[in-house]
Image 1: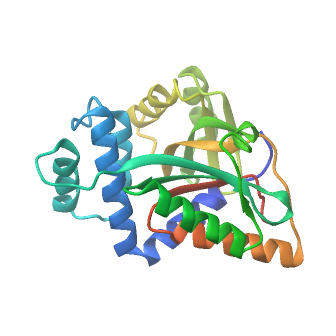
Image 2 (image 1 turned 45 degrees about the horizontal axis):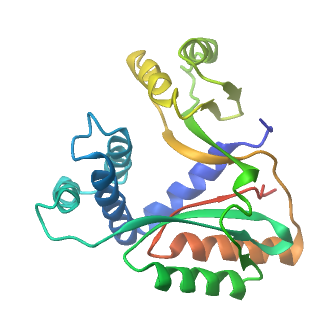
Amino acid sequence: MSGHSKWANIKHKKAKMDAQKGKLYTKLSKMIIVAVREGGPDPNANSKLRDIIEKAKEANMPNENIMRAIKRGSGELGGENLEHVMYEGYGPGGVAIMLSAMTDNRNRTASEIRHLFDKYGGSLGEAGCVAWMFEKKGLILIEKNSNTNVDDIMMIAIDSGAEDVEEQEDSIEITTSPENYEQVKKALIENNIQLSSSEITYLPKTTVNLDGKEAEMLEKLLDVLEDHDDVEEVYTNYESK
């Protein structure tokens, strides 16, 4: 893995979420609905649903909103006919961008995403055009403090199946295969280690830098993509300086 800190990106993402609670709750509700339809309403048997509920609680989403979304996903309440889609493309400077979205209208969402790419100097591509530049991984972040025992955390993570552990200035970043993600996460929690963030994500195999107007345009594109109502996550191989 590169020395680039993934913790900085997560902190940026959380700050944006805190500033847009209403929109975040809507996105989380959609994510819960889709997770229930794909894997059932029991979070103990549906790890994807369990992770999303954890995110919802971290965002202080009311429990009644969470339960309502679960009921919509299971068919107890009327709900949107949502489906999960992936989009791939290039930003300014040829930066790779991949995003996941949930939509009740593929044609509308694709048209709106294409418009945003075009408006900010990018281009929406075909399926597979940039996916090869990313790896699906489990990513667990732990914020360091004065009581953090880095050696113990590294040992627990590696012994439970982690692929890589990196110590950064203010965090410890643990990378796992998707298959070992749950067992590594469980081992850390059972040893009373507080996790700052944990998710299955797409990490770039290599990263690129941009300067000046290209960097400015790219960051605008990433912002408007993240703000789109249907977009769940945005992944890129861009490394901000």
